[in-house]
Length: 113
Length: 112
Image 1: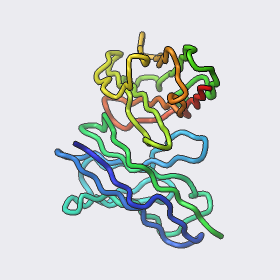
Image 2: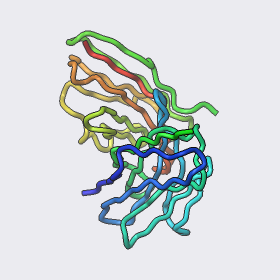
Image 3: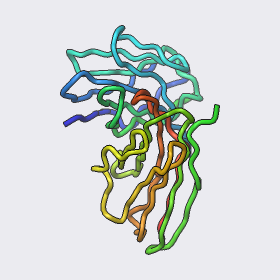
């Protein structure tokens, strides 16, 4: 069965510091991987996705993620965090085209000034 | 372009009442998904449609829940009768040819 693990429930970083949010997945076939961000009271916004090809994926708002098949990981990174990045981040895995997404539990990012 | 539209944004009802949540997918998208988000269970897929046909409803919690998609631009999720444990945020998402899912703003349901 497919599953996603986000080991960190909360992360606090200083503004301007680098960020890495961890995501490990379990999927029996070629995974389609996504990172979404959710601000309080809002819906989910797609940050980036990986379907195939280059394993380093660039997304919006300066985020990137690297797919590592050997580690079953798809970690999200940002070199310099801004206060507006404070939100909850969800990693998700799905099948062909990304249907039937399974989401991780989410990581809440706090940014301190 | 308009994104996924959901209504109402907030719904407060009493136990036993019927609740209907509505969703208008992005024009041209042919897949539609209903999710539920709770603190305890996170984001769960309830049901998804492809070309207006329900493909997988294995996530629907019980018979009190039903979903319809009468045409490509409208879907409903109905709970009858509602119970306090149904309180959650319900999201609708749509995609084109099973590509990236785009989410609506959600409906926050409170059942008293």
